[in-house]
Length: 344
Image (cartoon, rainbow, N blue to C red):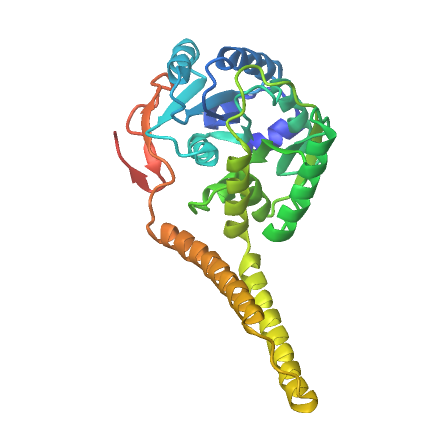
């Protein structure tokens, strides 16, 4: 019987699971989190030990420039259930998550942030929800601590983003989730450069459910996502998962062409029948600038898609691992990319 089946039946550890693989892997991208890691580790171990399941904690340090990697090495030296990986440069949160997923050995994989807003104690609730037959259970924040203006703009943003991206994106959805081994393997098979774990997790189509949680205040530090980075992430997701901007460009072009033809026909008929002179240069120049601007904008949209396609054709790895902790006892080189191994 598979470990996942055993976990669904009872939370005890069996020798069969121990001899094959782990029950739970917890993947955590780490960026500028030196003030959080000790407390995060303590609460994770307490929560996972209470579940009586074999587990590992995978922390992927994304070159934040602080002492996070030193802390990960310190914790890994004390507990061989913690495995640490340091990327060669900052590849971004979702690439760091991908690196962790590639290394995870558990039958079920939990993804969570390092700021402890995602409570380790909620992992048990996520596991409980999987017993209803879901392959993916996603945490959704139900408590808002922001101003009413930010809440309204956030809801409007998610509605517009969902329309552009072509799939329904729930307001308050977190990276915090649990995924079955089948779902993780499906997610790992997609290696495109423009990565966002949320949309990719929805695209694979495995049975999923939401679980409402209440976020804790950030334990230390502050979010690295400002408005500019959030908008950039949203734009990349739209380009990666939808061709709707291109379709809109086509619609706008045909609409303007139709309006211009109708107005030109109206002007000619009016001049012929009523002997009214054609309007002067002001309207002509204004129209030319307006149409020229739209053409440049449409070319820009097309250029973005071509540029992203060019990035994909390069076939570069999604991340490079520069260092790892040695406490896992595996030895040998770290796989930097599927089907490719290289020791740095």
